Length: 459
Ligand SMILES: Cc1cc2nc3c(=O)[nH]c(=O)nc-3n(C[C@H](O)[C@H](O)[C@H](O)COP(=O)(O)OP(=O)(O)OC[C@H]3O[C@@H](n4cnc5c(N)ncnc54)[C@H](O)[C@@H]3O)c2cc1C
Image 1 (cartoon, rainbow, N blue to C red):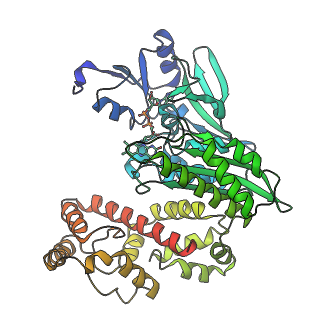
Image 2 (cartoon, rainbow, N blue to C red):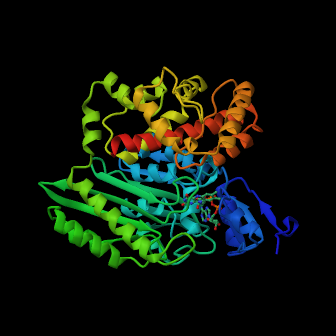
Image 3 (cartoon, rainbow, N blue to C red):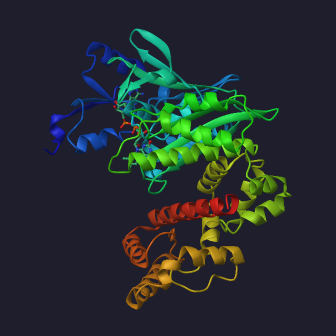
């Protein structure tokens, strides 16, 4: 049955102690709502646990990220954007920053919070494997005071957790002791943004005297809650990583998981992918963290390093800023750093990048594009060449209309899209106002850049 808004009550007391008192007066009656990205889905589906909602959105006490010498404490209502853009988190907790950058699209990242992700407790939640390997501590608050719970112990079963009805998560605390660790994260889904993971893995560890040390591996979507693969970690700990060990670890990871068949994937596929990702992590660990290409790029002179990445994104300011952030330990950090730089650029820098693309359906890249960029554009658009003549003509006409309306080329991440799909997207975006359309084009360029960085650094 459709939800009727008049049957619901929403209060926003505006400070944390007032929310905590309300929960204490009527424990279990009031449902906290932070960004609402999960709650509103449940509301629309008519499956909300309560009709009385108390807002945590923008409570200053829950919206801070504080770094001391020993810890970083993230307020539970910090959004993915807050996390992605925080310098210390990006630098020292790249697995969390990477998860934040691929949780949903931009709108979702501006609203969705870390506390909400934890309490929503989806087995596929993207930030939770990172919290498991960093051994985060949760700070819970109620009228009875505060208590700390290790995140590794917090989720006790599917959607079950050590949170009393009158309690909130106030903050998530991370110990600053992972500098120099090699980190690995992968989300396998239909596509990264907007897609719920089929499997996601976060790995962390060091190599000391040729031996794997303090190895931590966590996975999502392979059990009722995200899990640490303790048996696999134990197998690898203190050993030299070689082919036999990687094979044994792959098997141990698969037997430690309990994936299911559901609409997104099958148990067998999830097991196979989990094994592959664990093997990939261990190979990266054995290689000392950097892929050869990334290691070489880290050592180039600044102008050469900027020039090398320019085919991935044609903004010279972006390329120079990315080069200035070296050394970059791995691809996940590279991608989150690139995203952060891109989102902070001026529109004129975005326009410079857009100007390096050929028209969708156009055969020629502009003279300013590098030859590598031109060749990638041709690959990304390969579906257009084989499209029906009528669709190609439709695209040409729509491109002209777009350029007249917005004064620049239409930008869409063409990889994997048919000509018909791109034409439909172009026609839909013609209804955007200028500012919305510029943001939409910038988001498409961000996706193009990520795909190209992956191609370049992870050939
Ligand atoms: C389009 C879309 C795409 C998405 N993509 C992804 C994705 O790729 N990866 C992913 O992991 N998730 C994804 N999600 C899910 C969602 O965005 C995240 O789980 C998000 O982190 C939830 O945060 P929120 O603040 O919106 O939670 P809310 O919806 O406000 O709350 C969720 C639950 O947490 C409780 N809660 C919130 N804050 C607290 C607190 N401080 N203390 C106690 N309880 C609290 C609420 O009572 C509720 O039960 C997506 C959702 C949408 C709609």
